[in-house]
Length: 203
Ligand SMILES: [Zn+2]
Ligand SMILES: [Zn+2]
Image (cartoon, rainbow, N blue to C red; front, side, top):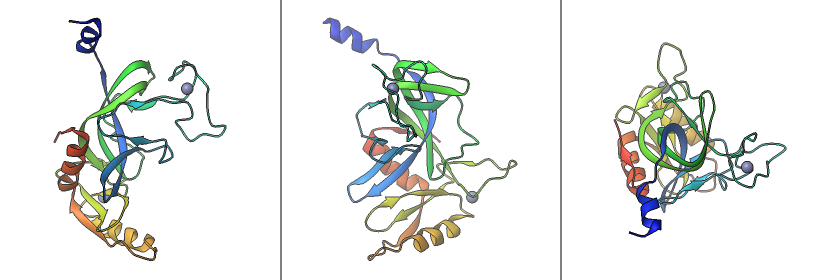
C-alpha cells in the first residue's frame, strides 16, 4: 500500500450540525450556506466544501490567513455541536456535516477547514416560533414550497403554515413569467437532494 493510500484510509472527521438553504433549478437542487452570498456559499455535490477568507459576508469583509480557518478570524465552515433547535435561519434544511482538516472549537460549535454533508434530518418552519413548540420538524412532517417551473429558493414550513408560505411565495413572485409555486411533502424533495449529494436521509 502506498503512503497516500494509507493516509486516505486513516481519514477522520468530526460530526456536527448545520442548516442549508436549497436553491432549486431545472438542473436540480443545490445546497447553499445560509449566511453567505450565493456565489461563495454554494456546496458542490461530491466535492469537499473548503473554507476561504471572506467566506462570511462581512464589512470589513475578510481576514487574510495563510490557511483558513485562522485562530483569531471569523472564516471557516460553521457547524453546531447540537442539533440547532432554536435555529434562527429561515428557509433551512438541517442535517449533520463532517468537518475535517483544521477544526477550531468554540462554545457552541466549530469552524472547519473542509466539510461535506453526512445526512439530512429536519426542516425548519420560520413561522413556528414559540418556545413551547420546537421549531424543527422531522423530514416526514415538514412541507416544502417549491417553484413549479424555473428556479427559486425552497421554503421549509409546517403543515399549518404551508398556505401562508405558499401565498407569500406567489406574492413575491412578480417576474414576467410567474413560476407558480406548489407545496410538496418534504420527503419527496429531500430524496432528490439526497440523491444529488449522495447523502443519507435520517428520520
Ligand atoms: Zn481566513
Ligand atoms: Zn409553522
